[in-house]
Image (cartoon, rainbow, N blue to C red; front, side, top):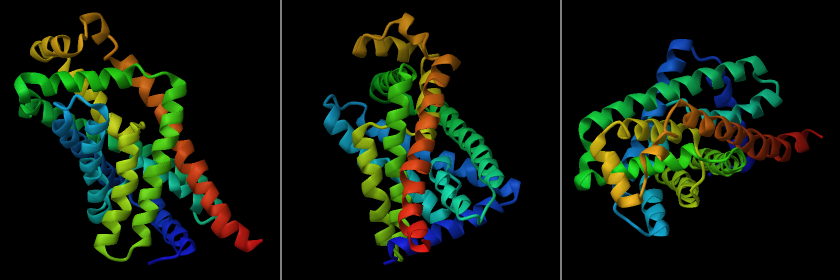
Length: 275
C-alpha cells in the first residue's frame, strides 16, 4: 500500500498528465465520466424509488451509486470534482494555474454533455415507467428538492460531498490491487450518498432527468398522487432551478476538493517536509 506522501505524489504526477491532455481526449474522457456518474445515479434511483424510509433508501443508494466512480477509476475518465485535486500540482508548480482552470472548465462542460446523453437515453428507454410511473414521480421529487436548495445549503453540502469524493480518489490510489481500489472508492462514496450531500456531476443527471420527467403528464400526475407535488411547484424545474443548484454546489465542490483536501494534504505531506 502506498503511504500518504506517495499518494499525493502520484496524484500530482497524474495532474501533470491531465493538464497536458489533448483537447479532444480531454473532452471525450469528460463525456465518459459524466455518463458513468449518471448511470450510477439512474441505477440508484431505480433501486430506491419504492422505499419510503429515507435512511434505508439512502443506504441502498449508497451501495449502488459508487459504481460510477469505480468505472472511472478502472476504465478512465475526467471528473470535474476529482480534478479539483489538481490544485496540489499547481501549488507545487508542476502545472500552471491556467492549465488547471482549462482542465476544470473543459471537463465540467464535458461531464454535463455526458450526463445529458444518459438523461435522454434513460427518459426515452422507458426506465421511468417502472412501478406504474412511480419512478418518474420519484425522479421529479428528487430533482425538485435539488432545484429548491438554498445557496448556503448548496455550498456547505457541496463541500462535504467533495471532501468525501476526493478522499475516495486518493484512497483508491493508496491501493495497488483492484480489491483495495474498490474498497477505497466504495466507502467514502457510500458515506456521501447516505449523508445526502450535493455532487455537481451527479446533479447534472438528477435535475435534467427531473425536468424531462416533468414533461410527461403521467409522471406529474403520479408525483401529485404520491408526493402532493402540484403544477405550481413544478415551475421550479427550469433553467433557473437548475442554476440555483449548479452554482452553489459547484462552488462547494471546488472548496471541498481544493481547500479542505487538496491544500490541506499538500501542506501536511509536501510543504511541511520542505520546510
